[in-house]
Amino acid sequence: MRTSFKAAAHTLAALALAAFGTTSLATGAQAAQPATAAAHFGVKPLNPAASAAQRPAASTSNTLSVGSSASQGVVSPTPKVYLVFWGTQWSSDPAGVATDMQNMFKGLYGAQDTWGTILDQYCEGVPKGTVTCGTKGIHVNHPTTSPLAGVWFDKSAAAPASATTAQIAAEAGKAAAHFGNTTQAPNLNAQYVVVSPTGTHPDGFPNSGFCAWHDFTSTTYGKLAYTNLPYIPDSGAGACTTFTDGRLLSGIESTETHEYAETVTDFWPSIGWNGGGGEIGDACVQLDAYVTLSTGTFDLQGLWSNSANKCVTHG
Image (cartoon, rainbow, N blue to C red; front, side, top):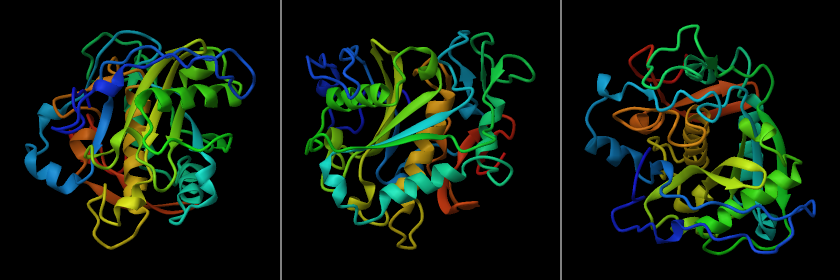
């Protein structure tokens, strides 16, 4: 979602991305230098049920259109997810977030994953303003194998207690180096999910009112798509999901599927797919569904489908 604020009282003073300095990356490569960002995207509210009550009912005003005719950076045609569990604090994971996130992405592919097929209708390389790709352009391809391309527990140092945007972007740069993605080509599909440990408050979470956000940063490795994913279970079972059954991991599953889908369809915001209700997940924060994959049952957030003209949980 295009936004100048994460919450009414949350300023964007921290959005000026500072240089990484001379800190060496995992591979010893030159530190990537992030560019200044003006806003974050896909900001899922901490209380989606209340947010949904404040927004208009889903309608054709939410129809997504592509923001650029570019053939790169609009969507992620073959999504690859890199989970980065940041900091020495991951020796403690009381809710089992690390295992859960890995299992969820291990199951997001193939015939059993009908949620992910919602994304196939969106593409890049078509005229700006397009709302229906048809057979034109380069489409998002539904994965035939797990999109989970790598997992890294970065225990080189403790994650900051209250990480800034610059620090989160820097961690994404370190991850790109760790996984050997040091040119633009592999980073045209890579998304780095920076998962902060329990007890930390990345970019002010939860007092900023958001569950997570995604963005991109410009580095010596090219532009990198990344997500700031806090340890949402710290906020309790009802945070970031419309379900009230007390399941502690629902909120982080719903949130990360929101961010994953928005990164896939608006890879370098905001040249991708946006509409009157925001990005593909923004208009649908009121819709959660338990979906059974080959690796378990997960809370997957609904997504906007142009072809169905509504929020859906399957393609």
